[in-house]
Image 1: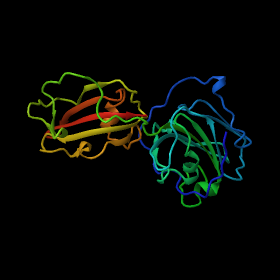
Image 2 (image 1 turned 120 degrees about the vertical axis):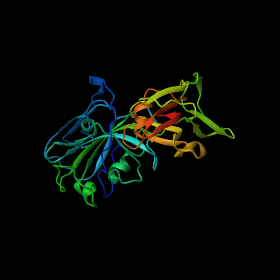
Image 3 (image 1 turned 90 degrees about the horizontal axis):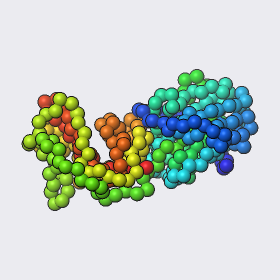
Image 4 (image 1 turned 60 degrees about the vertical axis):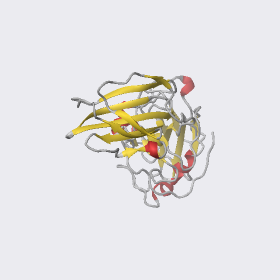
Length: 304
């Protein structure tokens, strides 16, 4: 277990966003980790992906900000200025009360170490922590709130805090150049891709019947890792309305994009329909939209 000092900090959390599913499973004796070597009087146990079990002697004295990894995951590490996804629970160290938890709100946090979603002491402590790990940080009030961070409801600006952060996802380590899997027969009377110089540049709605509700069809069935509700995915996609001649968004003409599912930062249609797909898949989504239709074609190129 590694401890570190952290500098004065700024913003605690920007906003807690949309749903992120937690992993399930019971906690066995082997899963219970003691964090008292981080700070006397503090014990954190449980499995990453489930809400932590936190016990502390109150008021908990935090003379300097310290942190440590209590469970080490098998995944790739958090890196500076790369996107990652956290499940996060924060406690008031003076009272011992839980102040906020993504496990309660059904929301996860997508952040980078270089943005202001997390206070700097936490961002610094997360660098190098592997996907699937649980980090515990005890922060002084000065490090948490001194430079303008807003305490959660019920936490006084002069109170130290304890943060338990589960690293749910980091960027995919393998990204395909294009879909890779078994092609699925074309869905009749559905939007189709039109190509220019071998690159998708628009969607063709000419033979499409407007459906009563949104539909999704797999066009290529991949065989790679499965997308979960908390994955970071790398995708190419094209999106167009039938009332428009050209797409309103097309990453095929630029670069693939990285999306944090289940955090409110990705298009809601992707949160709903990408979960359960394998890396290498291509998905067609289309449905009614005002006076016409709207459609997406999404290539899943990387999955964390």
